[in-house]
Image (cartoon, rainbow, N blue to C red; front, side, top):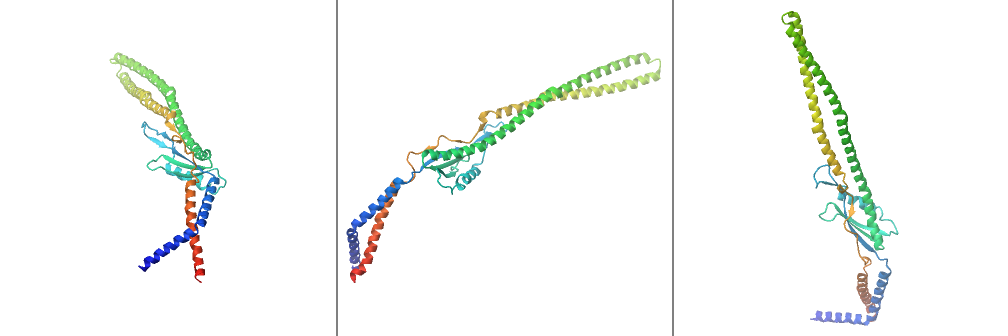
Length: 315
């Protein structure tokens, strides 16, 4: 019972103390609040810009429309940009803009989210545009290299087709024509020997045997020439059908891959997001915190002063 009375007395004393110094508490709270208001009014406003970046890609060297190759890995690009635009410039002074964060959005593997702060919306936007320009320059080099490689392959294919049509096939045609003439000559010789054999059968057996050996040699030559002729015609047909067909198919594929819509550089998705109001300083929050802090601090000072005065009053 005594404890409760003592607590009531203490609370009453505290309340009396607060009421006794209410002017001091009010003045100090108002002063600290005014300082916070002045600070928030004269503090340079900071604006924020945010953008979603889609990493570019190009179509792979096949007929699959969905098979695309990214120009860069999102994780590697994130680390590289963080090093260049955040870590390496963090000690610079009088910056008009500052990159806050470069992150990979959750669930997306080919996107980056970039946040920038600046003394104005324009400056904050310049920060993001600077990063995007840097990425586009690097990725455009990759796209140009891919295009040059494919153009070189297309040029080689055209040269192969031209070489087959103008040289290889033409040379085979001449060889085939020559072999046909040889075959005709051999057949004429064979016919002549057969005619001579009819006339020599009853006259001279040794001459007949000689002619038969000659006939055998010519017959073997005819077989060899016929085989060679067949092989050359088969080779010619193979070149004009299968080989050139495959080359032309490869040529069509490369011509399709070289179309502009198969190459996409890194770009900003939609627009760079900006706000009319600055994100810093948060004036309302600063004033409220200052008001509460000033009130609590003033009460603390009052109690502290009262504590030091109590021993003197008692003595």
